[in-house]
Length: 171
Image 1 (cartoon, one colour):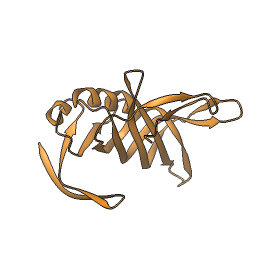
Image 2: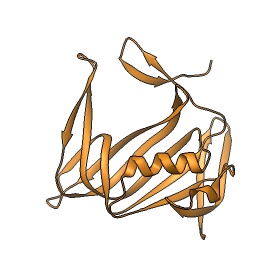
Image 3: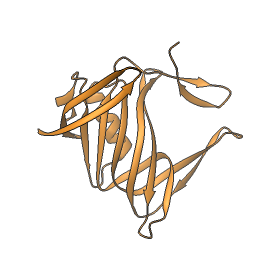
């Protein structure tokens, strides 16, 4: 496994968490980081389904909850916008390859299953930006996801007011 030196500093109240050594894995080697509760980089190859590969990796790495960030390129992405009035997602398919300028999200549990909640900012060859909730995409050239496992289990519950599956905050 390739190792990268990376300092990740998170402010959690008065505490600071520092990860000093990051391991890079691909979708076939995620079991190598199982039960380590250590940040890692998931490197996806051209043609892989981003969400399917991420969820498979989470299962292989025995992750229940994580924070996600990433970059790379996506092919034929489907983005969604949540219409709060109708309580429905409006999906839109985009054709071609787009620069993945930013990816932010998390993994959490709902009804015993791991769910990925991912938002992206994409740019096209004319430098126009697109953004929204990522529902589907193939890897364009590469996708590099930094996965920061979270201690404990983060859960989602359905919220009738919004129609969304929201993270259940601890009191």
